[in-house]
Image (tube, rainbow, N blue to C red; front, side):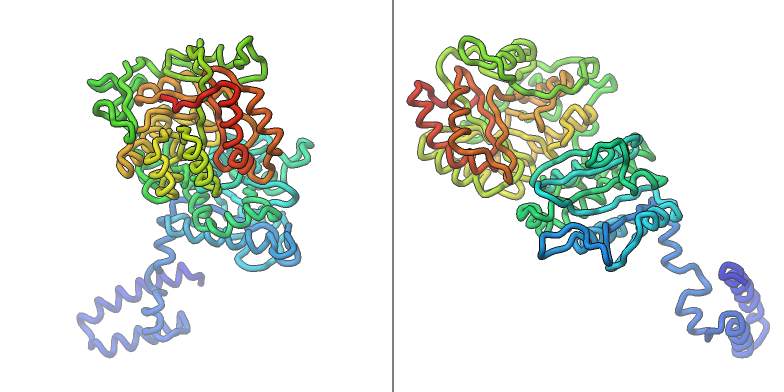
Length: 551
């Protein structure tokens, strides 16, 4: 007799016994029932009741309430150490973060199936068999990377469907917002680019991905992994939940932000409310306020210089009718007679009506606008601020919400020393603002705006697009939020902290590209920028240029 039939029989016996107790002597009936139960289960009646054998156990009740099932795979294990740096093994890091993801998901009523929970070796086929046999809804394999490099990358199958892409993108966005050294993107196939897929992705029956959480030989990646393992776990968990919600309901539920936490809302940006989700009309337009700005835009008049300012723009109608095609901004290498990038001049003429600025093309004087992007703090910002103070130069610092939460003293210093604070979004989506819905694009702007306003009393009015990706819809949304879109007419590869460009060559490149109305984009985590900034300012001034803060 199986367990289910035993339980059914026992329930019937108890019911009969209860009725019998109305007529029979209580002690006799109870002893008789105890004998029957002991014969069936081999256990004393007290043990049976206390162990929950007769009635459904808490575990069975919880299983019925699971939202969905995720199979988590800790890469390598046992005799297979994976990659290493001589002092640490990938298999151990993979198990640590996988256990953390599992613990978080279980707290969210998600059923978790583990391929391994200890230092055990499993074949790849066994791992897929576990996921497939348990009919998991998602399969996530967690690893660390090998070789020389830095940053996080995610691998999916070459023929991955929309559900797989959704999950992978959400995981990458979540990790990116927590803080990683480099976003290496969601990739298809294998590193060999031979058209094949990694075994896990090729042989699982559900959306699957392989997450490479930084390089074992990168001290920066190792430090981030150790410091942020719980945040990484939460970001992965929130992303999978958001993917499931979108698959089953068409959108993420309130209370779960699929972007995780660089994300953030009150806690690292992955689990907050979405306050901007209901600010659009049915036709996709953003309703204007009496001041002529978006309904979520900041109100009030012009603020004093140390508290930012508010723009009062006439709202753009029918945002949904505009092009949603994503464009990657780059100023190009062709220069006009004034040494201005022709791409920037052309883009300014094409998109200037959206209050978008790629260059100050009206500026005939030799004026330079310095801007710094702040996605995470790498220890360079204090020195940059010291140099700017010494040289009496003001700049724009574009900050994400998580940066402001993590570095309040630096943000306050930027404001107090007269620099402009710019909005660099909440989660810095790796695929850019146009990859999000109209509502989520607005929220990326306004949630960060509200956080800075509430915590620093400062009104931001300049927005910089994550990854430089924009669309006409995005330009209109940012405009309707009461923001100017600030791009750049000079930028170079300065953001890879583990591959910093040579200082003298970088300085010369910055000087060679000087032009009137120049908007310089520099990443504040760059040690090269930090080292050459003072000399650049001096030599630019010697060439007849002055510096102004973009207004």
